[in-house]
Image (cartoon, rainbow, N blue to C red; front, top):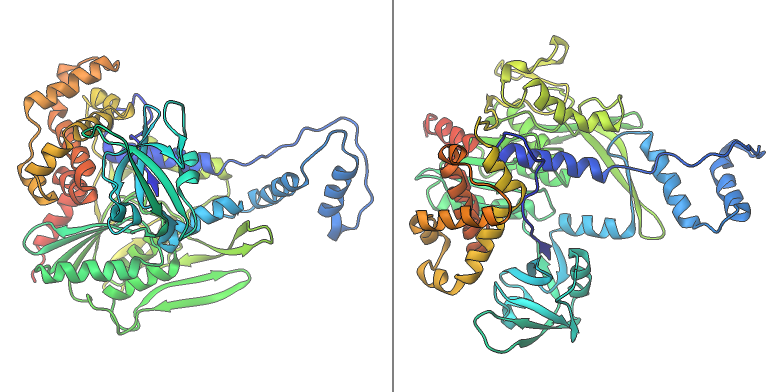
Length: 546
């Protein structure tokens, strides 16, 4: 089950969608890694005689026995663990049992629940998408339904957060939950008793033909099911005539190393080195391609950006270092540390960094982190400040980080994967109004309301995503309704900016309406129509002979 909400971005930046997504990623990563660093200290010091090996346990025991107020021993222990890991690297971390369960579900490729994506709108749970084949679809729930009761308890009319909703609807396979829904086009509420089941979570968001010979696949993460999903998508595209492929890893923060290796194996010849790892207490280990690759001869372009990390960088680095394909976009995140998970008795876990990843030429993917966690994550903001995101010439690497591929191409280490073809972010002098619409989530909200109110009519007019993409247009009347709606929400009309960004706003509006009707099958093809990295990949692949 997944909740969907409007886009959030820092205000006042004159930039467009790709960088907005980047900034959201930076803020999310940074906020998620902040730990309790300091404890209040008293001027009165008590010296406790302890043995060195038992120091931590002795202090914890002393606190529990003699501290002036009641304390939670479990919380103190958790904070102690976090403090130890905080001294190591940015990616060693402690995970509570709840955090670990959520993280594992997204990577295992399924979870147990009722199979919907929802959004809380005006204190009401709105069903955004009924997952095909899930128990909610089978029982008759529809996109656009409002859930007003769960197990006869009213869940509308007061503030709810997403986690509260998830806890109420999620549950073990085979258990039942009763939901009461209101349908805008139906006079009475409807009750459904849904038997929870295994819900698949897909990591391949979309695959489609960009033209007569170029296939496109968007991979959002590397889960256990990603290799099988990719194999199905590749075969579907091949059956449709694909002889060239765009593999989009932008914003993909990684996942399982094994899945990245299996994906690389699809494109690399037998015994080609994919990646190796090495740590102070871990001997060097190598991963090689096998004979099982099915798509070793197709022209290949891989798209990366600042949000591509870890397993994404392993795959991109393997393709680049083996001279197998073309990497297009901007320098990737630079996360090349290997974590080993140690599960604790209470269901929590420690993910400890035990090694580093290296590409086939010997490049270390990991960027430096010796200036502390804050500086580590601020590196992405530094890239923006020095101009790396919009000017390739601002990127400098010393000769000591230079490596050579088998065909003589120069590649660089030092953190992340540098693309073969650099594409700057979209910037514009008159993006202020566009940014405000996105910052406030107004395009998203207007699109949702429009699709929701006109769902029956739109569904009859456009029976599938292809028909919607080809025939739906944002006419002036609809566009002006968005502008009027935005004015009512506090964003003043700006005709100068509108002249520059009208097409961008209209395309994003169409994409969001399409997503509310046909999910990502309509969303990505519409966004890609003016995506500079995507268009550069199409142009580059067209120049490669079959």
